[in-house]
Length: 265
Image 1 (cartoon, one colour):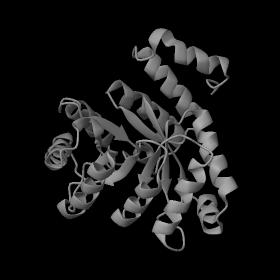
Image 2 (cartoon, rainbow, N blue to C red):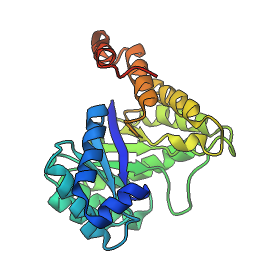
Image 3 (cartoon, rainbow, N blue to C red):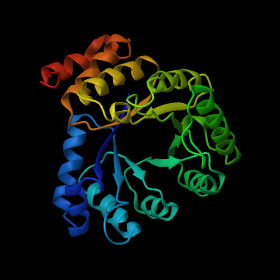
């Protein structure tokens, strides 16, 4: 299971301040804590920090990779910022987060994915917005896959995010997301990814819903999750779900996490 740590995001006030003040120690501490908690990739998003996004994301990538070796998920709505970050990345094969089915922007992002041989988070949406049904999500995934293949990008490098909507306003959306996961998994060797916390927006006890949905997504074949690895309950749930599904050889990872005191909830 790939775990993409989501904490280095300038939408968080302390991260935004660290980027603007060039506080490398704070950023490295956030990165290191996530890796120690189980993150296998580190998402980096500087889109809402003051100043030039290209300069900010390059500084953040360079600051972190001096001290932490985990690969990055380079997260930006700007192809220029993504290109700049990729040019300074030294931490192995990253993710580009993200591409959509909107053809104009997809061409820019997929050209970068091909040039730098990256993984890609592919959002099942286009310029008309987020789809309602699993079938609509799959049609958009097929459209994106056709585009990636024209760039001769391996299907194995594509991770589709079916984009869950809040069940507080649309009660069937968790089911549609899970159905989309299963259908996309039938599309050759492409993989799936998701940021799952949106499912609980507007409801009480969000953590309960989030961790339950996480286990359901794992059971339905999700390959990577974008979460806060410092959320001990979610990480414990993930370890338990992977073990129960037979994806943890002899439950050794689960046992190791227990011995390290990481299963306490």
